[in-house]
Length: 412
Image 1 (cartoon, rainbow, N blue to C red):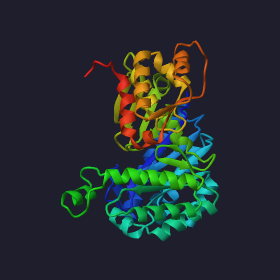
Image 2: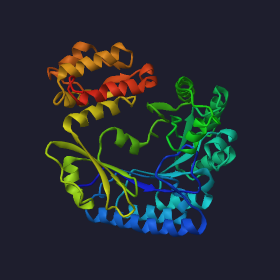
Image 3: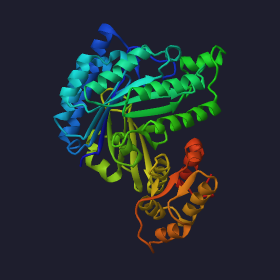
Image 4: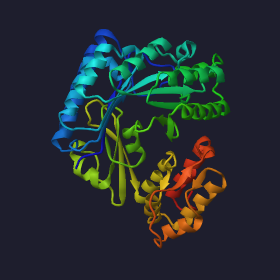
């Protein structure tokens, strides 16, 4: 058995950002060299173990994230080469930060087999970058995007809205400048203030204003209007791409495909059948009877400790409905029929009708056609229910309604 996707986590940065609560370690110079080399050796052992188990043979997408993978320099290229000696993915993404994405590294990436670079730009306003604790400037970010494009990579940039002190004018300017760079893909996220971070402490002390959720929602909607007007179509609640440039790795996450995560804090997800074929990599879990989906997070560098969660068939299908509603393609008839096999159809239809009545979902056809498809009286394919503009803006409400289908209505 081979998984569909492989994720590799690099938990190092040159400096921690003020908003970051990821599993990362700030290191530079000799400290980064020694700690990074030790980590890479353990990581490569795990890659080889996975290859020997036959888990990587048909991998379609690879994503190396962090942290800041590019702080490893040439050692990152070694990881790329090792992975590609065991599989032939159609998409290979490396995350990069502008200050550590050098021409030498870009050249090595292109020759090693990386196809896509995702740049952590976050803002193109220098004052906003300083508030976030980013160590690159807006001009460095623009040069990094240009470098990635000139080397032939499919290029993505991440942007954050709703920053303390950010105005609609500065947000629109960042979006305009990002579009002017002719990037293939833009991901837009509202700022999340996590407990225990420097930003959280600054807000609690009154030194920085707390993000305004209403303004964040408005900024997300402005991003939709501006980016789609510049040829980047929204295919997921936070993701925009030119035709054919969608992130296939993330789509695998959102469509329930099995993926393997290697490295400290990397997440994996398997169907029960897929897990049985690669259980030797984990040696931590006998799948409980009735488990349909297994998720685990690696807790150490060596890959010997894991946090494990199992989902029933009903929970897995409710999760798939929720994730389907994050994407512009929406919930398909096929997914709806599979869900109706484990969730009472009357409950499923009731929830869909409520979401439609609230303006969160739109139907591709009539209610009669939907009910007929669920009863198998009519064979239909393609999208069934898609998020509306209101559904994008009120996503948490919509996703909560669909996830609630994982339990009986009378459950507490």
